[in-house]
Length: 241
Image (cartoon, rainbow, N blue to C red):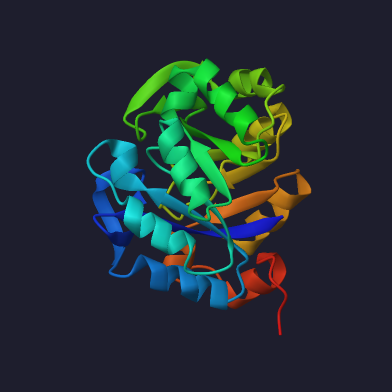
């Protein structure tokens, strides 16, 4: 079980949104690569990077995202607007360890399967949900898919992980939906990383106990709602000196 700081990029800045809404931006920092270096220096061996503008179709921060991913030797997963072979390959060639695909994985499962088989264990799927329903296009559209019914269909793909984000809880510091998390972990044939609402060390312990492989933390670490040094020591995945 590993804690993974989020470095979300919007307009060239590191931000944190509430409920996945671009208009509700609570944290804004000017230098995303410096933010990545700070998390790594504090003891976190893995980072989660998202190009929010690319996810929402409103821009592109590819250069900034590359700089974030290569700012440290942390294992880095990158998502947001990964909708073509070219973008996935460019990110992987730039030093990203895993690319995370959302909307196109849902819209074009054959393409996604081919990408996963081209880069085995280097492709993850982002399953963004609200009340158990999968969303698409940067959380702006609901599908007809329930996450616990969708995930078993991915069994044959050589995925690195499933990134499950509860958009309704993201950035609210209200805690996770434990029942929902447990259902997703049980339904998934691949390691599950939980995101959205993770706020306490107790929740981290509980997620590990039910089989989560990791958790992405955003607002809780950017607003010091959790003891960051303790989090890094217990779940950072980086040897402490």
